[in-house]
Length: 204
Image (cartoon, helix red, strand yellow):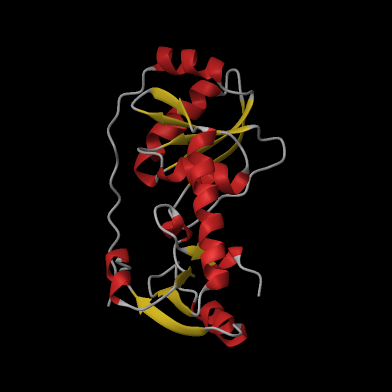
C-alpha cells in the first residue's frame, strides 16, 4: 500500500522587530530546529538572526529523531508549537533550548527536564525489578527496529519477554496486558508521559 505525504504549512506573520529584540536573549552561536510545517518561517528567522548570530545548524526535527550539533553550538532555538520537542532536546543534548512560538520566546526550564530524568530513572528501576517485559515494536517506516527488539529479547536473562508489534501504538491498551515493564524500540518520545523506558537506555 502506498503512503501519500501532504506537506502542510503554518501561516504565521514574522515580526522582524520582535525577533531582533528576542535575539538579545540568545547566545551568539545557536542551532535552529523546526517542525516541518514551520520550515518557511525558520528560514526567514535564520536570515534575521544571521546579522548578530552564528547559525551552527538549520534542520528539521521529527518526533523520533534527535539531531546532532557541533561543539560550538551553545543553545537550540526550536520553532514549533508546544514543548514536546524542546524538553526532549534538552534532555538528550544537554544544551539549553528556547521555543519560539507565535513570535514569543520561552526557555525550557530545568524543572521540566528534571521531571523527565526522574521518570526515566524510575522506569529503569522498574525494568530491573520486572519479571515480565513487553517490548514495543512499531511497523511504521522510520520507526521499525524489529532486529534490535529480537536481539534484545534473545539476550534478556531471567525475565519473560513478549513482542508487541503495531503501526499505531496506543498506550491506553497497555493496561490490558500483565506486563511489569515496557521497553520501547519505536519512537523514543514515547517515554515523555509514561514509565516506558527506551531500549538505548538499557545495558544488555
